[in-house]
Image 1 (cartoon, helix red, strand yellow):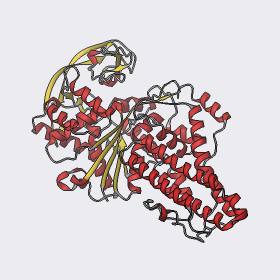
Image 2 (cartoon, one colour):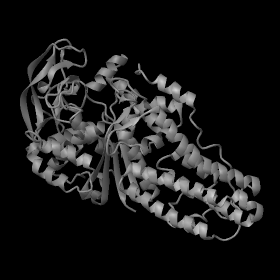
Image 3 (cartoon, one colour):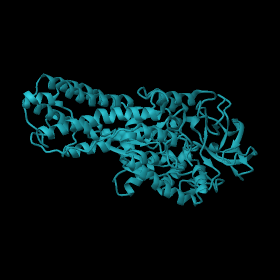
Image 4 (tube, rainbow, N blue to C red):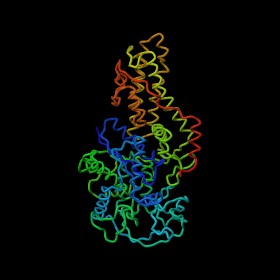
Length: 570
C-alpha cells in the first residue's frame, strides 16, 4: 500500500462553477483518488474554496452581503454541489480559515528570513471611478504580445504570457468599465522567485513523466522574454490574510493583505490542518513534511492550464525558499479548456451549463462519464448537446445499462433471482478471461499514469466484452437445448456485473453502488485474477433485478436544453 496526496485547484468562491471548471480539476482528481482507494492505497484528497481577493469582495457586494458572510454561505453551496457530483474529498476547506492565515503569515516570515522577500515601491493602476487600486485581474485590455482583446492585468489567457497591468493596450476597469485610470505609487512585498530560477529549471527538467502541457507552460514562463520575474505577494485590499511577518506586524504594510495567488496554494497545506482539527485525521505533518514521514508520499495536483504557472513556479518557489523539508509536488496533471457549443464556458460571463443546473437535469453519473471520457487533455474539447446525448445514450444506456438489464432479467425469468450453477467454463469463457485480463491491465496502466480519456475508452471496451460474450453465446437460445450451459453463461454475466461495478466506481460511483446493491454484495475488492473474479458470486447467491441504471436522453430534452442554455445565466 502506497500513500498518495491529491489536491485539486481550489475554486474561487464567487459563484457556482461551470462544467469546464469541474472537468479541469476537481473531477479528474476525484477519479484518481477513487481509483487509488480502490486499489487499496492510502489517500488524502484535499480541496477548498479560494475566498480572498477582489472576486470575493465584488461578488459579496453584488449579493448585498458582508464578504465574510457571503463566503461562508458560498462555501456551503459549493460543498453541497461537490457532494452532489460525488467528489470524495477527505476535507473541503476554506482559504479564509485561521489555519491558512497563520500558515501564510509564517511562510512569509520565513521567506523574509531567507532573504527572498523584498519591499518595492511601485506604480499601480488606480481607478478614479471605482475609488480604489485595481488588482491585476480587474484590469482588462488588449495583449501586447498576441492581440487578444480580453487579456487581464496579470496574464493573457490566450497566449499565457505573464503581464503587468501597464502592459495592456486600451486598459479598462472590469468593475465599472471605466478607462479613467491613473498610475499611483504604493509599496508592496515581492517574492524573489527569480533567485530560484536555476533550481526551478532543474526541478522541472527532472520531471520527464509530466504532461507536455504542464512543462511547456512552465518553461515558457521561465524563459520567454526576460524570463522568470519576481512577483508581488501583497495587495491594497480589505479582504484577505493581513500582511504579517510571522506573528509580528510588518512595518509599512499596514492595511494590506497577501495576494491571493500567494495564500491560495498554501491552503493546500492548511487544509490538511483543518482536516485534523475537524477530527477527520490525526497527523497532517506526515503528509506535508518530508522530515516527518512525507518522504514516502506521492503528491499529485490537478488543474486547468491557466493555473500551471503558479503551481510549477510560484508555489514551488515558496516551498523551496522555505528550506524546511516541505513536500514538493511529484506530478502535475493539467488540462486544456472545455468549450461550450461553439464558444467558451465562462463563470464571469455566465455562459454554459453550471454545476447546480446540471444536477437538476440529470444524475451526476451522466455528467461524470461524459466529461471524463472527453477530458481536454491533449487539446481543447467542446461540449455540444448532440454529442452529450449520443455518447451517454450509447455508452451508459446501450452498453452498460443494457448488459445489466438483459442478464439479470433473463436469469430471473429462466432460473431465479439467484446465481445458477451449470457446467464448467469452456473455450469461450477462457477467451473472455484472457480478454478481460488484458483489458483490465491496460485500464490500470492508463489510470496509474492519469491518462483519463484512454482509461475511459478502455473501461468502455471492458463493458463491451460482456455484451459481445452474451451476443456470441446467446444463453437465451442455448437454454432451449443446453440449460446447464446457459446457466453457466448467466453465472458469468452476473459476476461480470460485480466486476463492472468495481472497475467503474471511479467514473460512475452511483451506478457502481447500484450494481453492487443489486448483486447483494459488499465485496468491492479489486479484480486481479479474472478466473477468481468470475466466480466471486457463488452458486445460489441471491440478487435483485435493478431498476434501469441509465435512461436515454430524448431528442425533445436535448432540443429543450440546447435552447435553454443558449443564452447566459442571470
